[in-house]
Every structure is written in C-alpha cells, then in structure tokens.
Length: 82
Image (cartoon, rainbow, N blue to C red; front, side, top):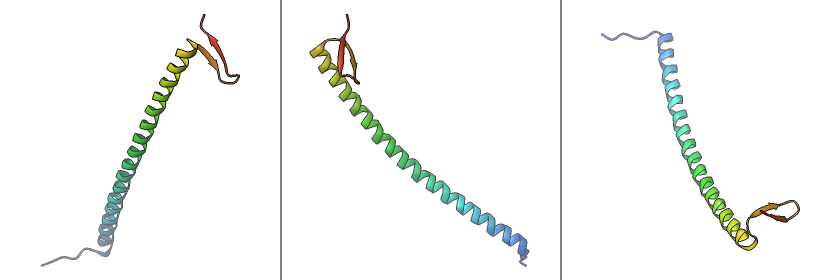
C-alpha cells in the first residue's frame, strides 16, 4: 500500500530539488568563470614576461651605449653614475 505525501511536504521536496538544481547550475557557471579567469591570467603572464624581456633588452642596450646611470623620463636626461 502506498502513502501520499501531504501537499506541503511535496512542495518542500520540489523546492529542495529546484534549489539543488540551481546550486548545481551555479557551480557550473563558477567552473566556467574559473576557466576564463585562468585563461586571462595566462595571457597577462605572457604579456608581463614579454614586457620584462623588452625592458631587459632596452636596459642593456642603453647601458652599453651610455654606461650605468639614471634616466629622467620627464626631461629625457641621463645622469651617469660617478
């Protein structure tokens, strides 16, 4: 013999199932966002490495040409280290 749940109990079960489904969907969205964020982080890391390499190359070229010193980017003047 089967027993039926009350209308309120059935409503609670359906709400719980819907909440679990929504939570599962949210976890899926979070996973997608993490993947996108990781991809963006990797792209930015590559850009950083590229800029660091450019900086090293330029610093060496300027150091070879002018010696060691400091550059004032506002005025474009170079002050050698004494």
